[in-house]
Length: 525
Ligand SMILES: Cc1cc2nc3c(=O)[nH]c(=O)nc-3n(C[C@H](O)[C@H](O)[C@H](O)COP(=O)(O)O)c2cc1C
Image (cartoon, rainbow, N blue to C red; front, side):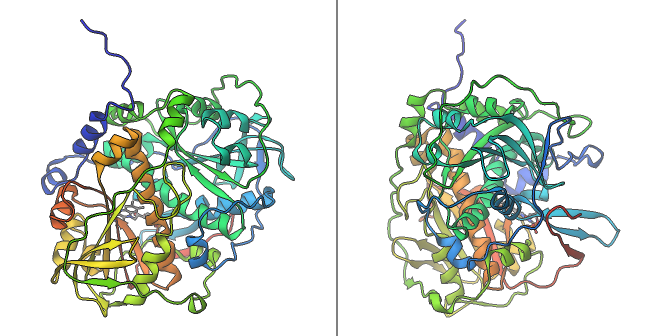
């Protein structure tokens, strides 16, 4: 019998199979038979027993830059000071508890700064930093519920992340690096194996807030998705059967990392999430197949992606007409993040073409990431169903970032189709616009292997998260939405032929939703 070795990042059938197996279709949703066991719902927080606690300052200053400016800032190279107050601000405005909603039955739910599938909040954040004013160098876990850090390691371990990323320059020079991980079961409880996609979407929306907040603080930041997984997981002391690192975000610059102390194994104790957990092998398999094992592999993985623009086809071109900078609404990033919350009902009223243009232009200014080239490089192809936008026909469009224009693919009234594609939810019918991010999976897998699958989902999550912020800055509402995979591709074909659907966002004017909302300050409940 031939021994089966570990699955390699280049065995891209893994990603193809995972994607095919986790598609939604009309019938898969109806025949899936998955029933939610509410008595076994996972706890939304990672609770360690017995680690030293560092309380974060609660008097955080909201990020003051205008949202549309902050969202569109491409990574700078500014050193900028980072201290405990700044760290507390960044953590609160990307993953803090910002809202408590009490439902008519009296049940309360906490919501966080960034949107998340099912409000299940499976993404955890860890900080690896040098000595900062008021915070000794170490590896810390961020706990949003008591707004505190838990110290996992003492000492400056940034050098370990520099080695794990094969000396990625932004990681080598950052005083602070945040590591985002996913706890599988917390999301898989509801979404089963499809949760692997959600890990990247839900970290993407957090990263969108984080990049904007660092821009507002005039700090450099960069997303790094290429690293030796085992080294990062070990540094964070993860139970790798349940939790995995997804991406790193460097914050600040010009602070070279010294050689790291030896990384001894740690296995911090945590409280179980629920009585029992169900294992979804598709998740762990896909994760294993996407790992990078050596510095050479990381280096070759990282070289920039060359996007192939979609072939121009379609009838009419509509050049974007964004709002001039000097007429941007004066909505600071802090205000917008605190106000954001997914729209549950849209009012079926039109938005203006200038608003839509501004949202598209500002959220697509590029992301500083190791898997993307300069600004303008993207793994995504963006399609829209326009239900109701002043000065734009209703129909299906393709958005060209390089030409800053929309191309009409087919004219018509597609509210019903938009509702259907969004898993038969009214959101798609009522919204003014539904945006769909698609990607050329073959091209991505050829370039990046299985790990490219997560990178593309992550980019979609980040751009989706940026859109959320732009939409709310303009006084409108948005919600992420799931979709029937192949039906989306078919709807936008022949233009979208060969592409797969990654992420969708409905936007428009909000109608008021039921429930009483309390805005929270850091540490309040
Ligand atoms: C990628 C993504 C997909 C989502 N899909 C849906 C959906 O299909 N239907 C829905 O009602 N809400 C959807 N949401 C919204 C979440 O339910 C919402 O973000 C979560 O409840 C947290 O609430 P908040 O966004 O108001 O903070 C989605 C959110 C994201 C980020």
